[in-house]
Image (cartoon, one colour):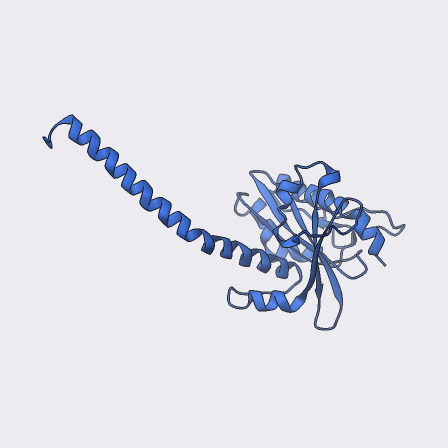
Length: 233
C-alpha cells in the first residue's frame, strides 16, 4: 500500500487509536483496585480526623480498627437497619432517595479513656460544588467533640478554608440542642461566635460556602434526629 496515500493514513490512524485506547483501558482497569484502596484509606482518615485522631497512610487502618468499635446504618426513624455495610453507604446517593428509604451511617468510636463518641457523615453543596465531612458528638449526643470538612472545588483562601484546622476548631464544645432541649444544629454567623454555644464564625469572603456548610450540618443531623433523641443523655 502506498504510504503516501490518504487510505494508508486513514487506516494507520484507526489502528493507532485502537491500540492506544486498548492500552489506556488496560491501565485504567488495572489501577482500579489501587484507586478504591486509596479512597477507602482517605475515608477512614477523615473519620478519624473528626474523632481528633491524626493518621497517615501507614497507620490509618490500625488506628481505625483501634478506635472505631461499631458501625451500622439507621433509618429516618432512628432504627438500625440489618444487613447494611455502613462504610459503603454513599450519602450523596441516599440524599436523592425518598426519606423513608434512606440509610444513614453511624460510627461509634471509643477513646483511650473509654468515652464513647458518635460520628455522623455529612454531605451538602458549597459555592462551586459538593462539600462533605464528619461530625463527632460526645456520648451525650449534644456537644460536638470534633469535625472534619472537605470540598471539591471551593475558592482557595475563601470557601476552601472549611478544611482548615482554624475553622474546624471552632466547632469543638458547641451544642446542637439549646437549654430547653430543642434541636438547633450549629449556625454559621458573620459576627464573633466565641460566646455563642450554638454557632461558629463564618469564613470571611466565603459566605456562600459557610452557609452551605451550615445547611449541610442541619440537613444531615436532622435525618439522624430520631436516633439522637432515642440515645442522647
